[in-house]
Length: 167
Image 1 (cartoon, rainbow, N blue to C red):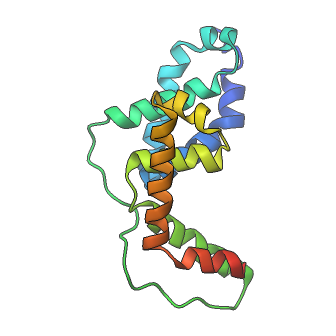
Image 2: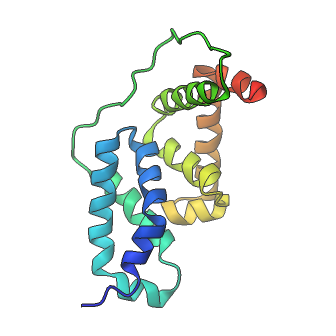
């Protein structure tokens, strides 16, 4: 049995899929499970997908649909807290780590759909219409989720704006 580029796709885009899964679940183990289940489903249709063009949007859509239909218990990797450690001006690396931790805590406050929309819009750099097509919703819904998510992030983590300016 030939894989027709499936292994190559997983090797080149697997990390991006894992990153997306982690950012929308907030948990490494859940993200790994989500990616594995997604790839199992995609592998069965791989030949047809590659004949139709770029399979990546379909793979992301399967991942999102898998997440929507999961019946597993969810837990947050980080518990949001009002008491954040004081920033240490020691190194750039510590500032970047601090920024990442604050961002992950803030993202865990958002709903799943908001995290997915933010990931697709700002990390994958998709247009609003491309996100709407992948999620099967209207452009207005994407705009609303983006607006609400960014507003909530500004409320729960104003230090992200300060950190961005300092970095």
